[in-house]
Image 1 (cartoon, rainbow, N blue to C red):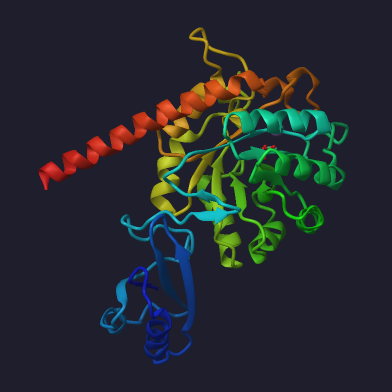
Image 2: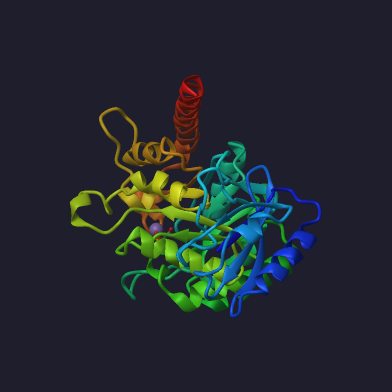
Length: 374
Ligand code: PEP
Ligand code: MN
């Protein structure tokens, strides 16, 4: 059972104490308060855990400061959108606000290779006014003989270059809990010129020990990539693992699913799930068109398949895009075939802006229609 408090309560503690007192009447029921930052409001919830089936809702509904009481199954207790009117719970990290209102493009190298390429990429982002990027240092590869990433060795110069070009947030995968410490140490040593959002890759979507570790820390928000061969429900449950350990700052990323039916694309694009994730959860949604389609080839209209796939996600309400770029794709040590050239950054941003405007226009028109009927 979830007791939802009025938003922006000044004296939340008193309300929580009153809920505790009432809950104390029911043996075995424990109380866990939470606070979330929605897109425009801060709101609290008190979760009642244990044998709540026989606990009535009325005594809680009557308390001042309580807005609503909902009975939920254990599923998505923390990440779930228990009421359609609930806001998306985003987060802010190093001055970058991730929510469902502003689109952020994390364009960058699939795998960090040389300081010169990293710097060229960061400079290209800065020219376009982009402050978010992706940089893979720890690469989970299908073959043990493929380039595995430079690991912690590259962190000092990646962070330095990011700071130099005003890049505020880097999506960077961690494949082991020890990488969290390495990332934090490197940021500390560099004096935090930038910040990291830790990426949990598709291959680790059900690595529960790693999920618990990223859930137990508060230094990094988490970019969770859906498991490529598991159901959406299983992927969302994995996010619930992270949240249940204490870290609710999660950006959920769709990246295509493994199915030969997607060929000749690398994966089957699953961006029709954007509205599903938004309906079922309060998480902001990211899309990764690069790992979905796996090629930088373009359609006869001149737009790369990656642009077309990105449009599918943006027009469905996604507000973050993770996309592979490389200043010299032919020299990339990982996924060069799907990396867009730097010259395509401006056009991609322009394309995304146009598609987002179409989406916003459509949402507005739909709201106006509903208001006219009401
Ligand atoms: C990546 O984004 O670098 C990556 C490896 O993606 P995924 O985990 O989705 O395959
Ligand atoms: Mn890749």
